[in-house]
Image (cartoon, rainbow, N blue to C red):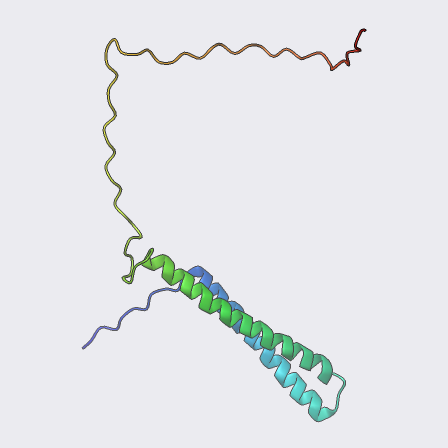
Length: 132
């Protein structure tokens, strides 16, 4: 008996985009049903329902594109840079740090900075009048 493979969980941004797409599709289908019933009844609701249906179609296509793009971004994040294999290069082992040289006894003293002068406000600018 074979063991069924578990499906990997979708990344959060892909799931959120899929939920938005389903909601948009539901909105579009409600608009289609309302437009169809309003056309059979000859009601004034047909025009707003057709406009809502058009917006729903646009929104659904937008959400489907968002799903495709977010799946590609998530797959690229899993793959790593410039690689055909999953997880290649995403976690590169850090190189060991080079040992720091120890200070030599009698070597150069650390650089001393001059002490900071206290703040003294300057006098306001006064225009000089040339004397001739």
